[in-house]
Image (cartoon, rainbow, N blue to C red; front, side):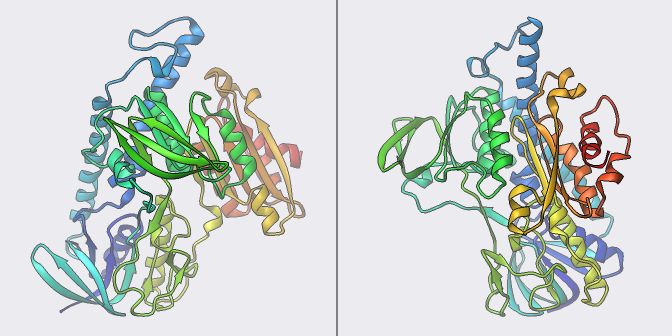
Length: 470
């Protein structure tokens, strides 16, 4: 049995930032990952490869729109995204290059810390509060550690629907060497969450006919309805959305797929060439975790803002706790865990989930952070709202994408910003500036005095603040 300072279960965003920080501080750290590479779901099959595909789709969509505006039809394009095709193999090759580049980058980073940091390929199980057993290519071994970081992430959730095995998931679309190698003529998406909606938009922009089937009566369930209505209102109406439709089964129909569903009690069906199952993700709880008394909250491991579980030396940052299932959130949580480990398991650092931005990479994109209209009401926080319409924004006008707004929410007594959303141009970039303001407790007065660049959409943030602060 080897004795170590810290063992991490996983080698993704919830694990390696902490592992690096602890190794640089002189700890002996071992990361265990079943893939044997330093990568969580984000690089393996999530945010990085999906956005590589999405950005290609956005370039195509904007090129078609620009050509239409100036009266020029590009040779490979028409004015309708679904009436021309792209080389999907070239799109996937670009995605793979991005993934391979980042894998090489991670390997280089890891090689700089080999004296204190080791990556083991294998499956881990927790034997007791200080012992982890690993089954790997060279056999079985046990590791004893002063601290354990559980960062096993999440996995695609596939419900027990008849014929679910006929569907593909985001894993099949975005993993390195994806199993879906051709663009479907007709794509059915089961689930109207952020993954389903993002895939629908990018595939439609690349040339697929897309239909979304959502069981609930709102897309992006759980998000602020005002935000969702605004975002959904800007999505290409060529994407068909069927709400309140419960899928009852999927059948093979020749070389096609048939989605069976009920809406309003009446049975119906949808034929497609490919069906994407996108009903969400669930935390992966490692074997032995509950046996040693680790508590669950919802589907994830219960943690405090210090990232500590009910065993003070065991930490659970990232998707495994189900609190904020985003890579950038996992990185910050991982560092919180490292700081508290180095402080002798004392809570010198704490995670602020309220200031973590979320972006839905649709077309248009939407992003939010902190308290918005619905969540402010739920927390009994009285707010003042201020909005800046992109119709009057110079950058939006230059790109001819004037749909959307920047909306800020201020606590009505202090005028400190508590949240905001952006729908439209540059949403993913703009939400970061708003998030910093939320994290630092900036007031409307402070935000109004910042000279954001012109002609960039960010100037709409200070303009919205000036509407409150003068």
